[in-house]
Length: 324
Ligand SMILES: *[C@@H]1O[C@H](CO)[C@@H](O)[C@H](O)[C@H]1NC(C)=O
Ligand SMILES: *[C@@H]1O[C@H](CO)[C@@H](O)[C@H](O)[C@H]1NC(C)=O
Ligand SMILES: *[C@@H]1O[C@H](CO)[C@@H](O)[C@H](O)[C@H]1NC(C)=O
Ligand SMILES: *[C@@H]1O[C@H](CO)[C@@H](O)[C@H](O)[C@H]1NC(C)=O
Image 1 (cartoon, rainbow, N blue to C red):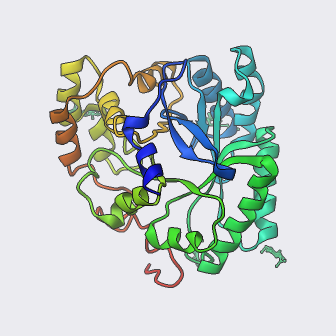
Image 2 (image 1 turned 30 degrees about the vertical axis):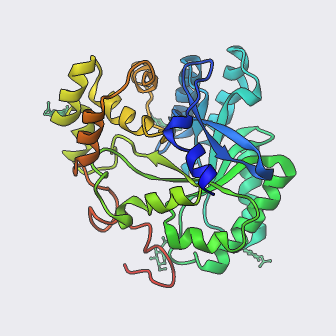
C-alpha cells in the first residue's frame, strides 16, 4: 500500500507529450494507468454544450474528459469523442475518459447503467468508472458492495481500465475494501483552496485515502457551487490574485496550480477556449513553497453544498447514520 501512496504523490508526476503531466493510478489487473492531471469537466452542461466544449478542449491540448450518467450529456460527449481525437491524431489509448454511475440497487441495474454509459459515449471502454455518490435512501453497505462487485466484473471484461468512487469518505470506502479484488483507484471529491485546514467531514478523509493508495481527485476546483460572493473568491479574490501577480498568472490558474502541484487532478468546467487554455497552462511554472503554504492555510471559501462549511455532507450520506 505504501508503494502506491508514494506513486500517487506529486513527485511521481510524469510529463506527457502534450505538456499535461499525468499521475499513476492503480488499474484493473494490477496494471498502472496514467491519469492526466487536467481534464475538461462537464457537470451542468447539456449534450449540446458538452459536445462543443469537449471538441474545443481536445482541439486545445486536453486529453481527459469527465462526465457521468446523471449529467445527461454523455451522448454529446460521445459525439465529440467520435471525431475530434481522430482529427488531431489521437488514438484511443492517448486520451482519458471518466464516467460515473449512480448508486444502483442491484447488480442488474448497475449493469444497465454501465452499458448505457458506453453506448452513449460510443466507446468500447472508459478509462475510469466511478460510483458517483451515496443515496441516503438506498446506499446501504450491502448495496455498495453489490455495486462494486458488479463493476469489477464489467471492468474485467475490458470495459474499464480503472475503478473508483466519488463523494466517499472513509466508512464508505471500508465497506468496499471488504469485498474488493480490484483496487479503488480514485476518490473524486470537492477540494479547492480554502479547504486545506478543514477536517475529515469536509475533506472526505483525504489523508486516510492516501494511506490506502487511493488518489484524491478534485472537483469544483474553483468552488463554482459556492454561494456568492464565495464563488468568485478563487477567480478574482485577493489571495489568488496577489499570488498570481507575482507569476503573471490569473487567480484561477493559481487555485488550480495549488492542486496540480500536489499531484491532485483537476477537472474545471469551461465552455470558452481562452479559459480552457488558461486552465491547462499550469506546468511551465511552479508556486513557491511560501505561496503553496499560504494557499494551504486559507480557510475560505469553505466546502460548498453540505450542511455546513465543516461538512461536505458526504460522510453522513449513509443509511445507517444519515441525518437530514
Ligand atoms: C443547452 O444549454 C444551452 C446553454 O444553457 C441552451 O442555450 C440550449 O438551449 C440548451 N439545449 C437544449 C437542447 O436544452
Ligand atoms: C433490480 O432493481 C430493479 C430496479 O429497482 C428492479 O426492477 C429489479 O427487479 C431488480 N432485480 C432483482 C434481480 O432484484
Ligand atoms: C429519499 O426519500 C425521500 C422520501 O421519499 C425523498 O424526499 C428524498 O428526496 C430522497 N432522497 C434522495 C437523495 O433521493
Ligand atoms: C470579482 O468579480 C465579480 C463579478 O464580476 C465582481 O462583482 C466583484 O466585485 C469582483 N471582485 C473583485 C475583488 O474585484
